Image (cartoon, rainbow, N blue to C red; front, side, top):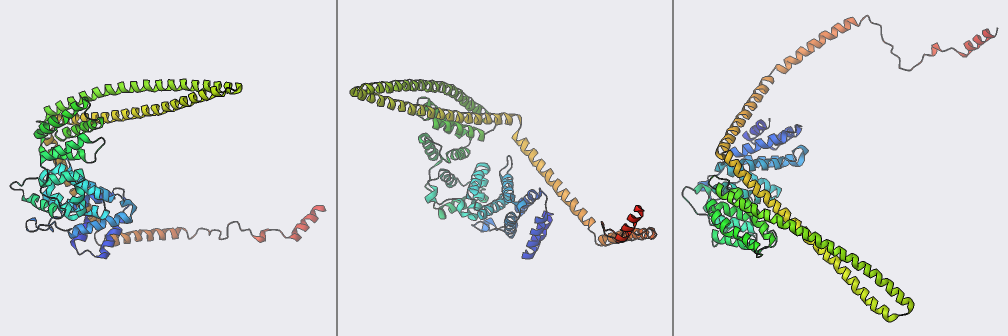
Length: 518
């Protein structure tokens, strides 16, 4: 029903009256699956809406929203804002577009991908969701390689604020990395459809990014310097290194990034030259990077990295347990010393009282000074205990981070083993076959429903059915009237109403009493 109404409305001129009629029909549906079905149909319509787009070869700007996309954007926000059952419609559509573009083993068509990206950016623009569209751009660069560039060009021309200007973006690590990777991308043959040149020009003219950006090697050194010198988590650092690793490929990543840069940081950490916080970031980044390359040729190197990480984590677990034992012992010693000081404090107070009664003021002054020093020393024990507890919390936090890194390495190992058992190419082929079969089934089901609707709603059927029902009712009514003619009539009085003629009068009651007396 959704698809039929949308197609009928789009095939004619969209008027305000027709639009309101469609809104009312959609809002009257009370099915829980209605928002999900409508979102699926909208994503499919947008994906197929490529005929009205401008020609890429003759135009250097992104095509504006087509009439179909303009109508669908309005429909989505009207339904979501006015009807409670469609409150999750926007989120469902955005998730559907992300699935269509970034799912595993799927290579989208450029024209369809740009249509979906434009619609996605328009929804985020109206909803003012800048973080969502920035994450979309990152996912595109991570998942689509060259095909990410036309999507980025489409997004940045549809939603200009999705990319900060160079004056602001130079201080944002992830934005700086993405702009460097775009501007340093080489122009190969048969890559005109990817619009790399147009995207570079857009970044220079509109956003102020210059071509004098760091090379891949310089960018890698910059990110590693930030990693080495940071004592806390740096926003965008992990994502920047992952994008850079994807650009370099597995062989270069393994040699330059893992073996020559990250693993030596672990050795420096063992020597005390690198902080614990930094080494936790290093371990997490190594786990993420090895998970990005679950290929057969990288299996041996990935397993070597995982064994290396496992040895570090086991060693660190032993150190952590030893640190916990030492901290507990120090805490008990401080508590014991504090109890001893409290006993000494009570003794001094008693001695001061005794000397005061005896009138020994000099002795009282000396003991009072000792009491003051004793109380200061007891206060220092509280501060020391608090410091030990803080160190213990930091140690537990470090252990939690190590367990997280261990989980990441285990995940990468599991994915490697899974790829060894299940061939990604075969899985992707099965997913495509399943998607095609599901699409055919949906089309068949829709055709059957439309055919049944047409058969059941033929002209004249409703009037003929009404005549048959009326004839049957008339026959029943005549039969009942014939049988009920001789039946006694029902009592027509009101319930609970009594008849006055049946009640004796006062004279009759007195006459009865007189007869009884005689």
